[in-house]
Every structure is written in C-alpha cells, then in structure tokens.
Length: 313
Image 1 (cartoon, rainbow, N blue to C red):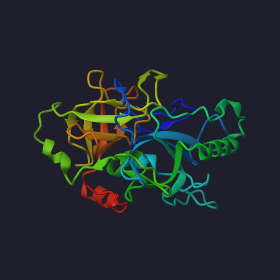
Image 2: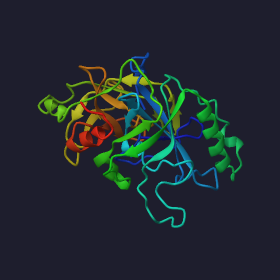
Image 3: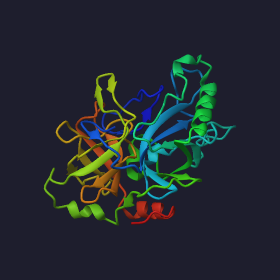
C-alpha cells in the first residue's frame, strides 16, 4: 500500500478487500539491520489532491537495494510516476491516450532510518493554484540533498493498474544512474523458493517484513511512519489468486504486519536476513489489521523481469 503525502501524513484511501501500498504495525525499530532497505518518495502527475486545483500527488513506498544500481519494489509504486512533472500515462494532446506509465524519473530514494522531510515547505502554505510550484520546490530540495537518490522507475511489463488487477504482477524496479554502494544488498530468492512451505502447518512459518509505513491506524487517526521498522508475521497461506501470485501473511498485534507506506518493502525468509522472497503488496483492512499480501518474486515471469536488470538468485 503506497502512502499519499500531505507533508508526511498519510491521506490515501483504501479498498475494502485489497488496498495497494502498506507500514509496519506492532513492529520494532530496524536498528540498522537492513541498511539496504529504503523509503521511496515519488510524484504522480495524474493523481488528484483535493487541496489544489491542479492534479499531482506525492506518495511514499518502501524498496530493497539488490545491487548498487537496482532497487526492487512493488509495481504500483513504480507505475504512473512522472518524467520531470509530465504524465507517463497520457500524452500532452489527448488525455485519454494511455502510454503505459513506465520510465518515470520523479522518484527519489532515501536509505536513512529516519528520512528528513523537513526540507519541504508545508503543503498548506501553498494556495489552491500552487501545486505546480510545490512540485518545483520539492524537486529542488530533493535534488540538492545527497541523502535522496533520484532514479528511473519501471513496473513489471504485465503490470495492470486497473482495479485489483495490480495483484497479478505487482513488481517494479528503480534504477539509479549513480551507484549507491552498500556493504551488502538484498538477495533474490530462487525459482519456486516458497513452494517449500506448501506443506507447512498454517501459521508455523515466520518471515520478516521491513518498511517505512504507518505504525498504527485508529479510525482516521494515523500514527508513526517514515521510520524503518521490522516485524515478524506468520505465513497464513500460499494460496494467492491467481495461483502463485502472492502469499498471505498474518497482520495482527501478536505477530506484527504491514500498513500504508510499506508497499514494495521486502519479505525476508527468516533463515536468511537478506533473502527477499516477496514484496508487500496489499492490506485487507483500512486499519491495517487482519491479513496482508506479499507479491511473490520466485515465479518465472518475475525472475525474467528482474534478470533484465541484472538481478538473479
């Protein structure tokens, strides 16, 4: 589930059954265990913001650096991102002509445990016709801050942003022109890796999820967020629909789970702290309880997609 930002507050609505983009609930601080997990901040020119006359919205997600130049995240965290403020889903002449929503460069990534959002003027300081200026001010601040790394976003080639179709191919990458060196990186799980848990008793297998999302939602009250956290949810089911698309994880106070802003964040197998088996994809409840879905990266189409960017098991 991605998070829409006023400044750093989440405003995005949710679907009842599956809401793209989620944050860590009932978790603990990451304590720099996963320095290669980062927060994404990106601009979607076609998104509406009720505070402004002009379209354009800012969102946040989570991702995992898999090499010095390639970060893996969710497809819905890479689709429709702008190119220098321009739409990637419509051309300039015909707003009904879809162009795929790929190749956006209005995405920045921060690997700090607590990214600094104070570099932005408050959104409520802009008039209703001030959204274009807000974009300019934010881009200027982001490009000037070395903690924020600008990249190019590409969703899975079969990603579909309509309805709940995003569930079927919810993978994406951000590629950096300038390498981001780390002592270690995330490692991609091999083909059909998760099938080993097919016969595991329900709720027996634990994973580790990491993200920057909200830590709690109570009605309209949202708590935490924009801090790297981790939790240890249990496997509820491998039964994604369509088959082999996602795993279902517990999302409750006993095990912890994910929430808005955690989308694209890694699900690690607990036997290896940097082995990425899936990315956070959806949440069942607007209060971030119940169950959550993590999109599998161990399937043939996803492995082929990532191999095109040099990411292999």
